[in-house]
Image (cartoon, rainbow, N blue to C red; front, side, top):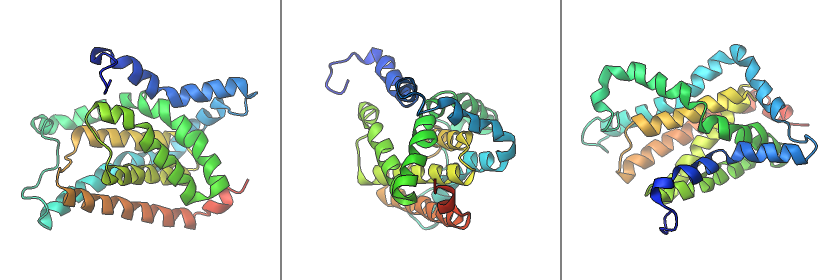
Length: 241
C-alpha cells in the first residue's frame, strides 16, 4: 500500500489478515503440533474473571490515567502552553464520553485484544520469560510487537522513531506485568491492550518531543513500580516449570 501496489480502498483485506494473524498462527500450530499449543487452555484463564475484577479494573484504567496525569504535569511544568486532555476531534463530545468510551471499550475487546493477546501474552510471553527471564522475555515480546505494527503504521503515516519504540515497549511491559500479577489471566491482558486503543482514540498526544519524553518517563516509572510488585509476588518461583 505504501508503494502504491495495493488499492487503498481495499485496506480492510490485508489489515484484517494482519490483525488476526496471532490467533490464526496459534490455530495452525495447534493443529500441526499435536496440541502442543492449546488454545482452549489459554482461553480457560478467562473463566476466573470474577475473581480478578480488581486486576481488570486496574488494567482498564492505569495507562489512560498515567497518560492523563502526564498531560496535566506537562502543563504544570510549562512543556505545554495550555491544558489539553482530549484529542481535538473528541472535545465536542464532552459528557457524552461517559457513555461513548465504554461503548468503544467493551465491543473493542472482540477485535485486536481478542485476536492478538492469546498469542502475545497467552502463549509467547510465558514461554519466553520462563526461558530467558522476566525482563528479557518482555523485551523480546515488546520489540516484536512494535515491529509487527510497523507496516500498518507506515500506511497511516506513523513513521518509526526511538520515542515511538520506547513508548510501545513501555506499554507492552505494563501489559506483561499486569498479566503476570493477575495470575496469567488473558482478560487482564485484553483489558490493558484495549485501554491503549482508548488512549489513541480519545486522549491528547502532544507533537512536542519534550512533552512526549516526559510522558514516556512516567510510563517507564509505572513499569518499574509494577516490576517491583512482581518481584514481591514471587514471580520467579511462579515461572520455574
